[in-house]
Length: 295
Image (cartoon, rainbow, N blue to C red):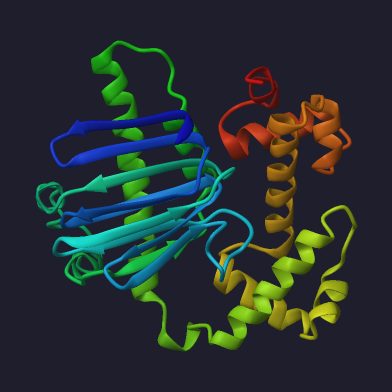
């Protein structure tokens, strides 16, 4: 059914890592019952159409409101609930998922930590969820958990656990920031559609130099509105988003087309292969040469 690598590791009681780098060989529907706890996920490639209970959770490239770029997701379950996932033949999935139990969360020790109440409130709401733009550091540690160095078992667990805790820490920061944002900053459905139009336009024109004025004119909004809505939804600027998308396109070319590092640099819009390699490693936690060597 699947081809590639799939790891499930219990790093310690109540803390479980799933690391997936595989290709789907057949259409598949998976069903299970998920226990209470929290799940944190980051799709580096591909996406998932899932339902927990009767609520859809579309992640990665399957997230309709965020069809491009990377997105981290945290969800909470206060009781056991059904889980259904659909995946299609040919899908390439590269993701890291971390699950924590209520007991693990209880033993973390939030007492005395500023703004910890927002995390505890999030943990008490069944099927609460939050999405955020992952930091470059989070993307790098996800890559490290996908392909950790060869270590003795104890050191391997410590290596992955330290990175899993960093992942959880960034998720809790996102929960805290979200709780602190005023309600007036909430995007309306119409705003989501407009930003989705911007993303589609950027994706179709990654090879062209574009000004903010040209992008705003194409989707029929002002430059200031474009910047405000884009940052509110993606947590970054239009041009930083475009830079990241070009790096992902270059990585895909390295992985699937066997292009040279110099050609990948050109695809990403870099005149210097050295500057491209620096940006690539900052984004993915590995070098373009290492990615190409895995072919």
